Length: 307
Image (tube, rainbow, N blue to C red):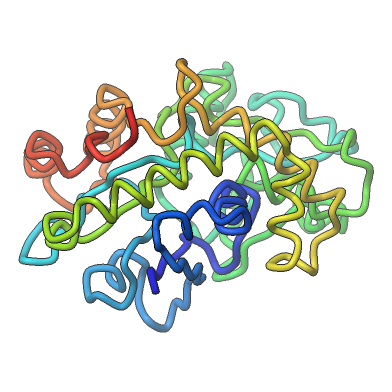
């Protein structure tokens, strides 16, 4: 059994390629019996579970990866999930918000008060000629809002996953307004890193190559046939309508592939630039020089992806 820990509390459309790879037997062709599990926060964060050996492969953020570079069980990324970042402002047309500057005077929820998101929002509003001090920011505690919070008048807009939370409401999808941070050039970065313990990679590099090859094929199939991706996810997401899954999937698919149409490749310049951005804005969990040394030593690599 190869245990793969997803980054969130449940699967979502960003995982369609992996679920389709399993459904089509692509992992099985390599003798891999893959189990996908979701985050149990009581067990600690995802990279900690991976480092302890509770799972074999996990999806983590770059800052988490950089924080787990010491000791025998340090982590290495062998693929990335997305070629762009995941976050943005989400609202609907009823609020009149069409750009970041329009957030002046509006109530904006920032999930769990994440400081990095405050910085991204502040920079996005400033880049659009707005005054961040005029925003009314709300920390919702452990609750993560979706578009229903706007529909019910709890806020005017919120930050969350630009490809998922917009499609969980009751209004038609064409009423959704999404302002990705990438669209205004704020902190571009890969969203998640597919990681394993370095000792496991060294012990069984072919297993990592096989998992990566099957996963690449799964994302190729899902991109060519989104409905197959929906079908592969539906059992795991039985509480989500197929229409919502398809709308979300249509939005996330373009983020999967690099300029050559390949899934998984890390742009090392992008990785380094985002690391520096986090360091310069006080969001790195390790000193910047240590983070850059970890990158130089290969904690993010494309070596195990198929050519």
